Length: 112
Image 1 (cartoon, rainbow, N blue to C red):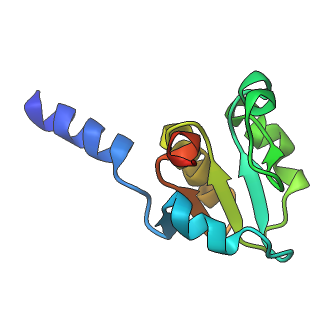
Image 2 (spheres, rainbow, N blue to C red; image 1 turned 90 degrees about the vertical axis):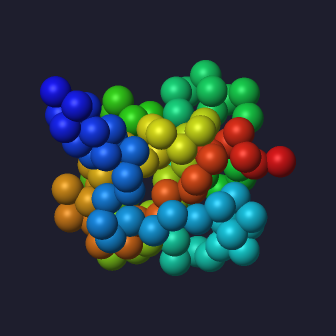
């Protein structure tokens, strides 16, 4: 039973292989690159309340249906409120064939 719990926690919280992790400070240096894509996977209400200019709102629950709005040939930066949903979204993108995915650790909570 303990092994199952440990495995579940490991799968849930350890970043997937091939997904980069950056801080919000590192994100600031990447923001104005036109060759990169920036998505915010929070809900529309969260996004309206506060967001980073240049990020497109594609809520996590809509990501699989709206993935065609993104190019697999360009790096994708993913953010949410705390880093949990963006980590999950990053794994979804990886499974859908995206090669360059970067998750923003700490999300909007760390963006100040």
